[in-house]
Length: 222
Image (cartoon, rainbow, N blue to C red; front, side, top):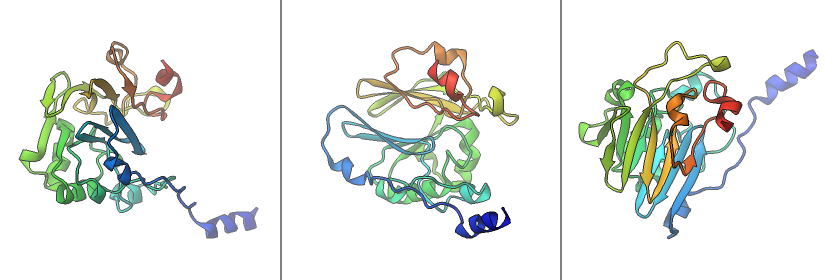
């Protein structure tokens, strides 16, 4: 047993599984809505000429990953520097595995995107130097009309193990129903299941997280 454990220690963390690069796909003129998963709760969506991202964490140098010794199981299919055409970057809450610090710094430099942010993320936005003219503040219950899309922010209540509410849950965190290209996408953020979720209608795409501190398996199916 001792030899086995020693061998595992020498082997180190497993190498990430390769992913299919997706940047070249943006050049394809595909009608309708296109979606790409970027890892964790991160997504890209495009309809016509509008490209949006949710909870993008695209860089190996993210401080959150090192702080919590998180292994990345899959290579990132795209990096922030390849998103010069990004129009909007949606952030659900301030945790570093959803509001990527290094990713945001690169998007600030390499793109002209605007950041849709809940009140709970404004302190981090200040620290990262996001200028006011590139911020859109998202308040649950208040619809936002942007060029090419309509946004309905919804309360997100961060969970913990066994479906409990996280001690540091912030009621200013947000999930988003986004109307784009005639479709309705729902990104709940990190949240336990709520009555308001079950009351939503006409959702075409649900970007749900089935992790234990969110809606988990049974409630995700529900």
